[in-house]
Length: 568
Image (cartoon, rainbow, N blue to C red):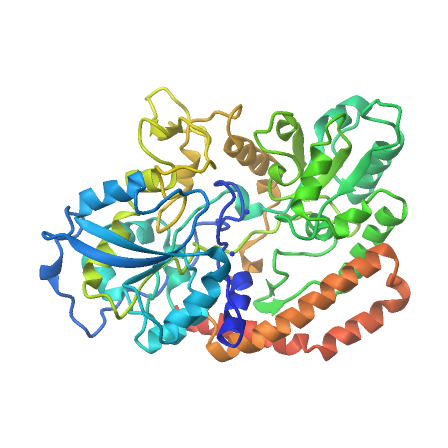
């Protein structure tokens, strides 16, 4: 259904893993940037930088080849396990032939990416371009102000044929990547994942509902009764009490037990922080959170919530969903059903789990949190070492073209994908744009497999030919449209993508780790009964105050206010 960095600069970077856009996606389905409503404020207009751009170095915007003479760009990029070899990759060869730009690849192992990025930016051997290293907003501001990363405004104005097109189609992209100083230091890889925009979902094994003659629950009380039926009425019909009514996991994609269920008690966005009447706020110190904790403890105490849900990893959760003999997993929260069963797996259970709409809680709340618009920022930066920054920018700009995006992300036309015929219908019910010929997610050497800039708009993603029997995308679209869109949170609750100064980032990183670790630990203790919700709540709130939640929210508010000021 995120950025990856380490302390003070490494502290900055570690924070931005949480604060910046979602990083890598899961076969085009997971860990993706949450799309949002396309309305809202637009960013400040692009302004030219003082340094003139040499027009003679490249062909005019949108024309190919980009350079008359063969040009080499040194590109540092994080490895991608789905790509065999960037140097010999079919898309690389296609791009070089079309643009006359040859890429000298500097491949960085994922485990060393954060450290390598820090070293290079802090005075190491700079490449021309840094790509897919997810340069954080804080890094962009620090190293942009030092001239190590060059601003792109002037290049966008003169050569940004595709970049300006996507800004016009979705002004939130430009707004999200523009720093408070008005500069754009990095190009994004927008991926308008509709189902990711309302990602906190609950999946239930539909055959068990059918077997027991149950309707889908709509309230927390009905959800409790469903779980009791799963536990006591042997829905898998094997004569054993082996059913696990509800599970999850703290490390999966929205599989934590509090993510979906807490929204029946209080608004609970992915990273906790939201806007409450224009002010940054958190849910975990409110009386409604206490009420939600009591509900979760009740499920645990009665054996309806799997104890492993508080500790197990994603592989263990999928083992429950793929139990080889009979189904044993009734329900779990997850961004998509591939977190609890093998998507496109031989068992076919991935098609048998369906979603529940947000539950209505005792106070009447029934809401699907809306993710902030994060267009996968920091994907492509040009450094001061680039001898031909115009060529580097034009290369990136070309990748936003629809066919370029399909070649880059999906593969070779006629092999992995093709254009749709006139009579084919897309996932969104409109005339289709393209169709997938082979399943994605395989190791191959035909595409870059989501590396580098691309533009996957909602129209592009949902313009895929509707083949639910072989693709998750139609299922996820329909489940989201039917069960979550009607309960979508208001935009004024959503804290947008923010730029923090290096000082703010360092302080925020420390506060966030302390506070979130405490909240997560306390959540588990309250659920299991190791702490008593009634007796220990006030002490819990007092501890949060001592951890300086007030200052934590002040920093968010300062960054939010600065963003609003820069947009005036």
